Picture (cartoon, rainbow over the protein chains, first blue to last red):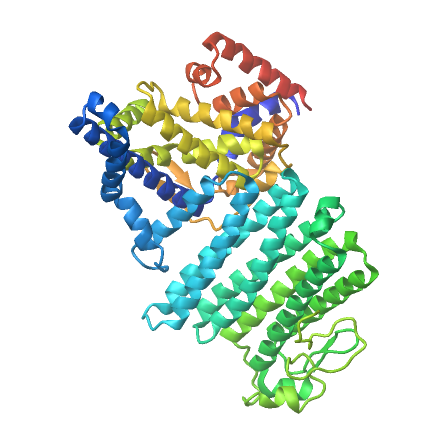
Length: 398
Length: 196
């Protein structure tokens, strides 16, 4: 870079640097937490100065204990924020007090001592978001879908943060702590994936899409957790905490989750194609390839390509597990998770807007899984195969 | 003028017990402090944590200390100390600054009081023609290179060139004289130019 270019670049520095901006959602959450804390502190000050007015210093010296107790009582009475937080504990997305609940959580995170503590708290709060979604899903509120959508968006955001922070913590904190946090996140993300699937039943398509995004984020955070567990597994303290067999089980569970994801997504794609799929589709073979129907639309063909690709990647992942090649497995897991996420998103999109096929007469799908032995991706129709990938497996791995 | 607004908000906090006034101070400086911290830690999550801590620590300071002449300088000072603390605790993981500059999150632009805009990461809007793009690419490269400079040099360049602060204010933040800061700025520029 010449001096002239250097000087010109300096002028642009401000413009370029201004591109670095915090996440607006984080800015807003932190603001609520900080203002709440400020409000609480100011109320405390007010209470203490009031107490001093009524109890001069000589008297205070004599009755300091009771005075402090009284001040505490005053504080609790005046501290509307404390009452608000209590009241907000059971609030749900869309409720008036819900931002208070989020701000209270944010405050807890800010005051956590270590980064791993912060991460564990975040993982715990992520669980709360799912509980909220369950409560809303079970309720009869008129804005059910929009509230679930709001909760799912928050959940996705939190899961992305958890995933990124796990990466940061992994490079900074002691390996045993990191592994502990990763284990928790793996466990939570697996629970989340199951819970989110249940929540989706009976929801509108747009809300389902948002929940699917949250599912993908959960899977992605889980894969990151498994990667961290793999990378720290050579450390003796971590080995004491988690045996080789346990790690293998964690990896297999993760792969099983992805297989279930592909199976479900494939079934959805089949459903959107009606009878034509029954006649023409040949899904599942030893190599995990698909035969695309002649009448399939472009979007359907693309989705079949995605399924094939995802299954191939998953087969490679399983192969690496069999070879105990943990080094290469880490990257392959991530690749497989991305491929499965793509299939799941496509399935959701196709379900929301099914492809139009003029040659296909709409027909109920119950025959898909039973009448056609060639359609193997149905969870109800497991087909024995020597293939490395069996998208039909529904039993949890040991 | 900006300092006048800060002083007014400080007055509201102290005399009117107005917690929202601190919220407005946060609105004014959250993005700038985040950016300042991000240049040093190069991790969005860590920058978020340190920025939150900065405002909480500053709040405690404002609450307990009588005289604060320059609120903005206080925020930067606290942020700088928090970053140093985090360096002491651990080595920060590497993160590409390019990624942060060019990545595009769901960019709903949010106008916040005091002229702090949030949510606009896309720098391509500014580019007009090939020269502009090249100049901005060079600027991004310079930003990246800045992390190779020593801490004080990074601070003085960021505060001056990115945040546009005056030498007197930078001197307050870095706890040095104005003359010192001027000299340091020119040395930092030279060091940056030589880092090719």
